[in-house]
Image (spheres, rainbow, N blue to C red):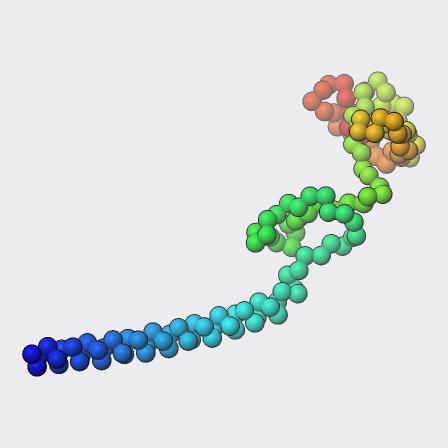
Length: 135
């Protein structure tokens, strides 16, 4: 019986040492986590995403928490006043179209309304259809 008592006392002593060691390790990890949190809060301003232009966000390309570099696009931003239209023009008509020319555009979504536009460039490549050129 005395042997069991001594053995139990030794086990209790070892468990107390293990408990104290674990408590110290957890306290150290907690302190490190607090320091890391403080540093990340200070760096938050450095990693905020800002656009160089003002406008409306039309599409978000990345998910929250996803890693990106400084050159990775994260959203598509545009003007609600000006639009860029990419049109397909038949090769028969392309000779009559020139940069700077003003045109009237009718969109399927706004059949009753006409819009004035200006040709800014003509892209010199053909599409899959052999008789259409991108404008």
